[in-house]
Every structure is written in C-alpha cells, then in structure tokens.
Length: 564
Image (cartoon, rainbow, N blue to C red; front, side, top):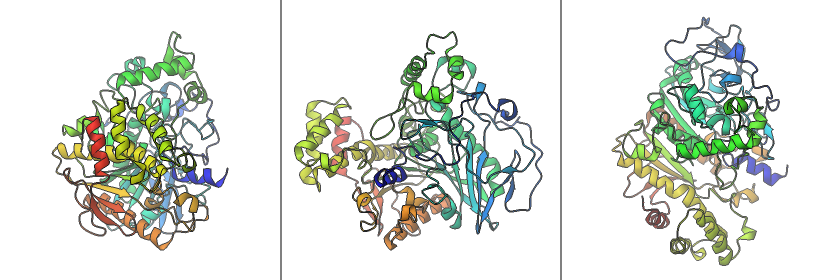
C-alpha cells in the first residue's frame, strides 16, 4: 500500500473502511456456528441473573455475565473484545440483538474481537458475525468518585469500520485507542455493531418474526443494547452510569443523533456529541426497496422463504449480493431507516417537535470535509473545471438550472484560494456544514433548555512533517487523531506543539462535556448556541469563538432547499 492511500485510510475513516481487520481471522462462512452456546435472553428485567464472583485483581472485572481478564498498561486498564450480545448467527441473523449467555471461567479480554462482516477497501469480504463486542479503557487506580463515560460509535457509512481500525499502523493500539482519554480522568467504551445488510435489512417477513421490533434498525439496536450493558456494568470499571456521553464520527455521528431522537434510547445516556454526523434516515419504503434488491442479487427473491434463503448464505455471499458504495460522496443502500419503533418518524422532525431525548448536545464539522473525496486539484485547475464538476454534483439534488446557477455564484472560484478549494467548500457545505446549522436550529426550535454547542474544526497537520496530507486541510476524520491523541506517532508523524495544544483543547472539552454537560466555563470556553447568530468555537491553535459558519453560502442553500 502506498503512503498516500495509507494516510487516507488512517484519517478518512468514515468514508473508507478498515484496511487492516486486526485480529480477525477472515470471513466467517458458517452462519449457524455458536448458537447453542451463545444465545441469551432478551435485555429485560426477566433475564436470569448470573452467578459471578467478585474480584480484587484490577486486571479482572466481574460483569453481570461473568468475569473478564484484561491487561494493565501502567496507569490504564484495557479490556478488549468483551461481548455485550449473543453472536447474531444462524437463526439470530437479521434479528434484534439478545443478551449474551453467562460464562463461568475468566474470559480473555486481551485482544480485540473480530470486525463485523463488511467489504474491505479492495471490495473483498472480511469479518465474522460473532462481532458484537466492546472495549473498555479505564484508570488502573480506583477513582475517588465515579468517572464520566465516553461511549464511542465508529464511522464507516454504517457499512464498514470497527472499534479497532488499523491496529498495526498505530503500533498495535488501534486508532480509537482510549488510553489517552482514560489518563485524563474518564472511562472510554468503544463498540462494534452490525453493518450493511446484516445490520439494516428491512423486510416484512422480519417484522412478522419479531412482533413489536420492526426491521431496518438492528445496527442501532446493537448500539442500544451496548448502552444497556454500560448502564449495568460500567460502575465496575470506575465509570458513572449517570454521566454517559454518546459520541461518534461520520456514520457514528449520525447514529449518535439518531439515538438522541429515539425513544428506545431514552435514559441510557446523559450527553451527545456528534462529529461530522447528520440527522437523516431513509423511509421504510426506501429501505424495503433496498431489501428487495438484495434478495434479487442473492437469488432469493423467488424462494418460498426469502429470509431463510438469505440465512443459508455465508456472510460473504450476503455482502457480495449488493455491494455497498460508501466511499467518497456516494450513499449506501443500507443504513438506519424509519421503522416506526427505534426511529418512529423523521429524526430531524422529531427533534424539531421536541419529541427527542433532551440531553446537552455538541454538534460539529470540519472545514474541508470532502477534500479527499472530490477529484484532485490537478483535475480542478480552472473555473470551467469547477463549473463542470459542480454542475454534475448538484444535479443529483434535483434542483433547477436556475438554482444551480445561484449556488455556483455563491461558490465562485474567485472567492476561494483556488477552483479546487471552491469545489471542496461547495461539497463540504452541502453535505456537512449547512445541514449542521439546520440540525442545530431544529434542536433550538424544540424549546430545548439543555446546553447546545457547535464546533468547527480547522486545524491541519504540520506541512513540514506531512506536506501531502496537510494540503488537504481539515478533512473528514482528521479530528479523530486529536480526540484520541493517536495522531502522535502515527506512521512516524510526531505531534508538534500546535498539535498538542489542539489535542489538549479537544480532549479536555470532550471530557468536561461528558462530566458536566457544560462547556461555557473552563478552558477553552465555548459559546452557547443560538439559532439567530450561529455561534461556534473554532478548534485550531489557538481556539477562537466566532459566529456564522459560511453564513452567506448556507443562506443561499437554505433558500433553495426551502428550509433553515
């Protein structure tokens, strides 16, 4: 793999999937393996209690299903591959998750679990269905009082990704390694959830199988079950179940906001932080149509029992029946859809109407989200190049030629550093910057009294140390290296003083928000959001407060869309 592609894989995590599945041994081709021993009761009060002995060894923690043995890394304890649900295999494939069964021996928690089935960057299937695991990073020394909990949902278009992405490139520690955050006084949980068709297939027959739990959102149901696991168990790791912050990036940021809108997630978290996320979900009709295309691609549409036909396929066969396209600016066939239960209605409308989980919210985006998704600068050198590519891009939104002209005028290349920069701004704003303002305004329109904040991440890598990547600015996923502190040491990159200042500002803010829900005090100080002025904190070195992220351009797009 060349350096350019490897850097892309490291930072453009939500648009690209993992190039290294870590400890996964490959695609699981036995759909019914493990059901007899692993299927557990549903997550409710009637689930039988397990007999679990307490432990005084800091490397061993007693969970409600059994004890787990992790590793001690100085002042941080690490527990990897802890199951929070029964493996969704055999008859449990395409069904809502259920609790894991009890175990008796100390369970090894020193390695990541397998990644969930997905197609890798080369379009090849990888992963295993027994993948519903989580990882916990906690201080070794017992805290004087319970610590805030940071619950992370990875990105990848809801079709790729894992909680262990690129472990080898980060010296065996994974890009989402929670050690640095734990050392600052938090408990960090990173989770995995079912992806693509295996996580988000919608079909009438599945609704009949699971009364009251309609299909189309099982990947979200996995996340909700993991949150329930946290509520029951995180105190054993030193965490405070009353101070759980859900946060995620890209698809994980989208899922975070979907959980804010979902009645099924009520009471399971106290704060929400969305990094380059969204607030949309396809209709059930759209999801059903995607399911039908999958059945046709898998040669199951005409089967007497189409779902049984799909369950007889290997995970690889299911994935290859309708390969997702999740890189760049292309949308996949499978993502959380409006099912009438987990997502009862349009999530943004539900929030605007005030029918959401009222928790403090941080919502932010990066200044050059799409710089690695659009054609390279060599292909966008003139105003004519910009117009040709921009017109083709805007045409997908179904707007008129006159409206396209208005958008192009708002992004005239003369207003930017180059025609390529104008294209990056246009695509970034239509996909992330301006929808963020719309979604934040929806929160404010709901009458929410809990704090709401906006950030704009503009920091870039040092051009002297990473000239090729620095040229792309603050692109999609770059902030993750600063959230987790894993930019330092990545492929030989050494954080500069400016990088360390941004790491400190981001990590201190994320933990402070998880702990208190309030960012208006402390350093750095964030402005409370107001719909009229669109205030935000710019995460760079130094951090600054301002108002109106690309206000002129977003006003133009809002007039065309007929909304905020």
